[in-house]
Image (cartoon, rainbow, N blue to C red; front, side):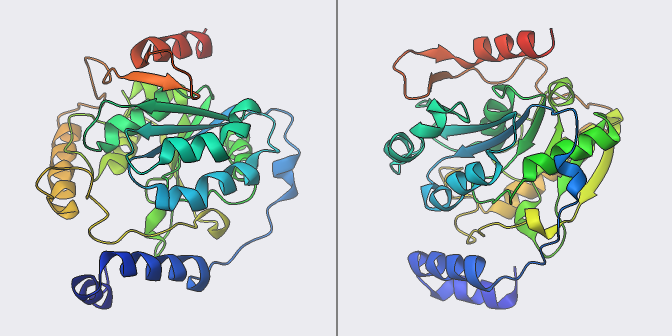
Length: 306
């Protein structure tokens, strides 16, 4: 965070900070878009790709991103968007049913809601979205991220060119908001046990997954095309506001998780969640039937890896 941003965060009301950030992020931040290689549209093989997003009380971001992301990638023949409503209390369910149901009906979006969590836990929420995904390739797309036009075609091109033993991060400074844009084969994700649910609620979970993947033998490749690096930033307060009862600062949580991650990797503990991921009661695509996430995840694995 710059000194100016830090100073403003102390004197400006939260609502005004949010409005100023949105204006800057959507109108003032500059990106250099490149012409995408025509080869990305000419691949004979199309991997199934799932873009995985979560939301707890961040509808103010999602209103800008989720539909735009679907529209920018819906021409790819095997794309799925997964959106987890992690007990969001800001009207997400009503918004999704009104504005996103048409994409559910078109087979582009799978929308899951759980009413159980009282606080956001990044690893658990992201594990839900990734483990429930149907795609051979899973890609984390934070709710404040824009994928960019034809991102799915580009991912498919990378996996066709380099195989499935890679983990990609779409990021470069100073576009810090896409640090968590990780993309890997779902089989690799499941072998790693997903994001580490023993972590504190937020911070470093993405880099931990990346580092464990590299230690397990995945080849790390960082992609820096600015076409795919757009995002909406968070205020200091927003980074961890839904995560703890006593409003622990984000960077304190991140630092603790970083130390835990480093120790685990030093000790060769590369697979997270040895006893399995958290099991949630969930509802799918605005239905009333109570489902259990572990059962659905097992069905997905059986189908995907059969």
